Length: 468
Image (cartoon, rainbow, N blue to C red; front, side):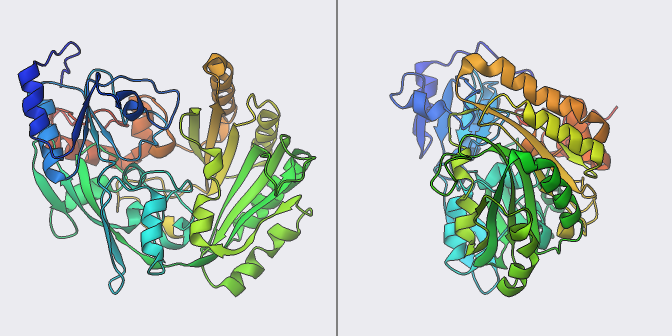
């Protein structure tokens, strides 16, 4: 679809569009435009022509029809947390779903129906009232929509699967303005596609999840000075190899934050940490994580029984809105000695005290699902690595982006063939193809069926099959 970059809309056209919406239409002259146009990643500085703050499915349908009629670039925003900045665009229309925050929980059936404007903190607060949860993001301000559509890696994944594995059905508006139900019996191909295929097939207006009994977990963090990085990462490699499915873990290179629970001598200094969540019996979990608490006598030990809600927001301070982010990510099959040496070397060269390297363990329930069951395909990898360049001053961007790229390049010999779209920046078609592996051809055919003109192209884009 050729998108117009110099589209001019008359006053009457805009007024007709405005009055057709229940939600607000924000133009460039609106007093809240500067605030509303911003997304989480401060590197993204785009200026849409229009922002429609939708209040229901009718608004979404109207916006899609308007964008098609006027050949406008179309972006879709849920939580706005996507690092690549796909939740906004220049000179186009943003469908802002953030006002749509409805949620209902069926405790007997253990299901939750949720609208796409919710963040994980809001979703979890509701489901935890019933002692239930599903796999959500490790930052509570992340939106449920993009996270789920991209796969959904979180603390409950090794026990209960990815967020997309727990997605039972959706209501979705497709490129031709139709509102469809997609579930196991109706439009099952579309449900398959949105379970990891991102926003390529339409705008999801309602998600229905399977929920699980989760209230208290054994969770938290142990923190060590960077001088112990090699021995701790080698220990983590051996420890994670025998971890039960109830346990999800992450190893992190970071700078110790200036908070009261960190000894003053370590604050602002390079450090390493292991973050964990055991989502089973608290008594068994305490025994499982005991080696994490005992190895090397951590400088900080905040690992113990806690509410799931507390764990879900524990890392929020490290991901504030408006900060500059540039990420590179890939899957890793094994923490070999050579790979560990590269991690150590690149961590020593880190250019910002806000940057980090995260190594998250996969496996467990993720691997028990066949790769063709959902669009999310890379289920065999042992780890997903996210190299997170983060800083505050735009003048410094080049050096921090360079460190992120250099670290990713240095690990090239050890990456597996694949990519996790929720951690990808603005990349290329080859990387998108790698993300879906053998599912890619099926996704292209599905794209041709539901979005043949590629209206929904501001994403990790799956181009429609040409039919040639």
